[in-house]
Image (cartoon, rainbow, N blue to C red; front, side, top):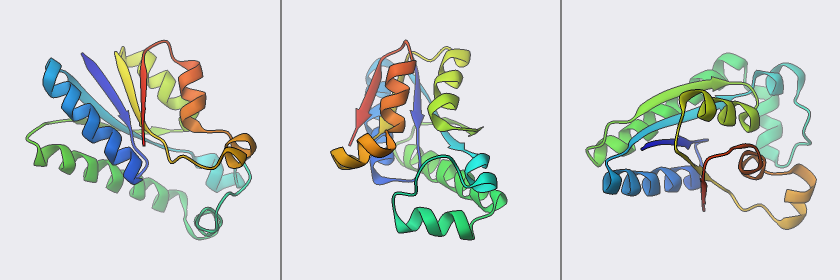
Length: 148
C-alpha cells in the first residue's frame, strides 16, 4: 500500500506521520511525506483572512525563498522522525494551494490512503476559514485519516 502524509510542521502533522508509520509497518506499506508551499499567499497576501498573529507576521516577514526553505526543513524533520523508527520515506515538496495540490498529487501518484494532521480550530474559525483537511476529504476518492 502507498500512503501519503501531508505535513505542515505542526505537532498534529507529526502525529499523523507517527500513525501512518505504525500502519505502514503492519501492512508493509510505503510512505511519501509532502509539504505544500503556496506562493500566492506570499506574492498576493492570499485570499483567506489571517487567523493568527503568526500568520500575519509570516506574510510580512517571510519571502517565498524562506517559505520554500521552511518547507524543505519540515520535510527533512519528518524524514528524520521516520528514520528514528528505521523506516525510509520519500519526500516531496508541492507548490500551490495545499487543498488542491495534495489531492492532485494523491491521484497522480496513485496513493491508497492519505494521513493528515488537523489542528482542531474552534468551530467558529472552521466556519470562517474552512479547513484544508475538510476540503481534502471532500475532494479525494481514497480514504483519509485525520489525526489530532
